[in-house]
Length: 231
Image 1 (tube, helix red, strand yellow):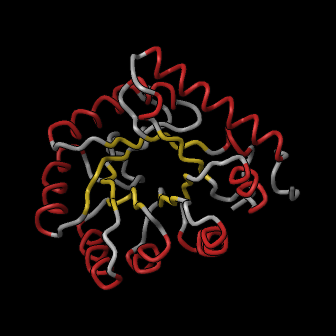
Image 2 (cartoon, rainbow, N blue to C red; image 1 turned 90 degrees about the vertical axis):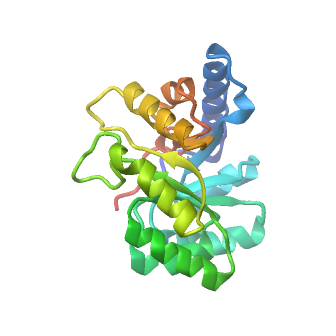
Image 3 (cartoon, helix red, strand yellow; image 1 turned 90 degrees about the horizontal axis):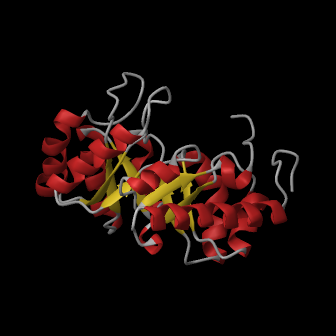
């Protein structure tokens, strides 16, 4: 491993086993099928060696926050492991949309009309129909991306009906200083009334609560790979 990762390959394997076990336990506790909850391994600012350790263990579902970092890391890995599913889970600038459509398999952070229009255009040009999630700013934080809850229904309809985007679910990141449960519950209610079955919510500190409230994907990074390198 490089000096930028504080976890060895064996550490990472053990971490995956632990987190997957906790997901199973949470699912069982809340009478859910653990197979319905996917673990997205968040590899942002992690060295390739750490990602390769996860790949060697059989994991294929990953999340990255930045297009540029993903471009440096993932093309070679995806060529060697063609069954990788790579999610964009960070904010997307419209000038990076074309690159994102080429590299990623799922985009979880559709958060504003301008981006939705650009993505629809770029997907059509690339001949791709990527699944997307609408990011909802459940805490209505000014500094955070995402459509406000009261605007979500209208935005979902615009993305699906007007732009023909393949909207499969919703994503949120609750405020760090608040209990996550009400935010997860709110996201679930918005999804249900819009006929969406996928919920990407929950991170290293709160993924078990997210499982309780219906998460179908949890995004875990440091608990799997250890501390990240400096940005």
